[in-house]
Length: 468
Ligand code: PR8
Image (cartoon, rainbow, N blue to C red; front, side, top):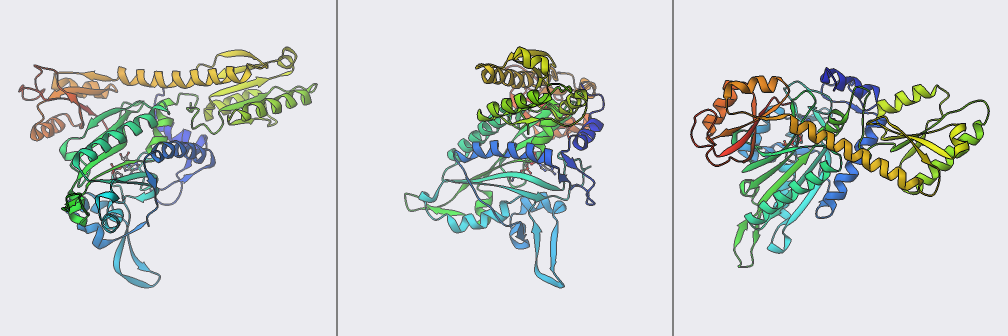
């Protein structure tokens, strides 16, 4: 795999025309055309999944200071990260306005107006917006940005706690399906209390292991209980005529999804894009000689049309440069499948297909089975991409019951699982002693297992890692 991941990641963003980070504000970058397309197809997919049972809305970017300040825990969690608008032209504003770091405090005062009765519930809204966080940790393109340009945040309200717990499961399933369609592996864990979203009862998180062994939190799902409902007075009249507070959840994904597609699937030649989000799923490369140029180009155009009719995204690279350079470029850009046609192939009525992952060349006849064969290759490519990413993950989660081994395992590029009694003070001591972050509870501990620090009965199998 890639030797120096951080450097590779920065270089590929520029070389593949994904983002440009030279914008003169730290943590804010430009989505370049190729990156924008990947982002677009990624968004289409998450929308498709959310739209089955949620509705899209769009809230204003600015949040009045009074609303942001209302929920004590929440504001404490975000106060160091908020950008403020204090002036309109030459006038000082009467009230400071926050650029949303997330939209709970923009949305929930409106929920209080909209929710009256049990028939108004559940509410399941989401929006895709930019949010702003004045991050103090080292910023990195797509991974830790100060303008999160692609924040997909969902906010739900329910009549009962059971329904809100079910909603958490629904979000987990949606995120699984979403990441599965991109071949991105994940570990789902319940964050420890000290890493729970500010104002939430509990947080479920999706983490992926990047090639350098550090984990990236790619999505989080929070059960907000009734905390915000009480703060913002979101009540409904139940069937029995009683006025009750709603139960709420929220869930979010960011630009990090694109970072994980790039980081997890990429190799030393560049990107390897899952076909779902690849701007071109197939790149046709004509091999041209002076003689028979036109026939080859006509065949390429015909092939493009046939494949596009099947809903595939296809481009022809007809630039006047050496084919070798074209191969190199589309390898860098991660097109799943290249189809090459030269005069000899034309004569034999075939095209030479080459998958981006294994680089193997196969001859496909230009006959009625062509599209079937192309789909077969694409599916196999996507499956293999996903399988190899999942294998990487399973090879890099290592169990230990010796606390002194944690550091070595992590420095070797692994995530470590261990048994924990579940006591917060003990958990924090484990973090302090090792210098790494507990990701969260992976599952219940096996019968009879003991806490790695205290030797007491263990409650949970827990993950610890070096994190982004
Ligand atoms: C919420 N409220 O806000 P969350 N750069 C890139 N990605 C980021 C950054 C950043 N600076 N900060 C967070 N993320 C809830 C849920 C509405 C939606 C990504 O939750 O603060 C992380 O992947 O946990 C995180 O899991 C996700 O946004 C949601 O942010």
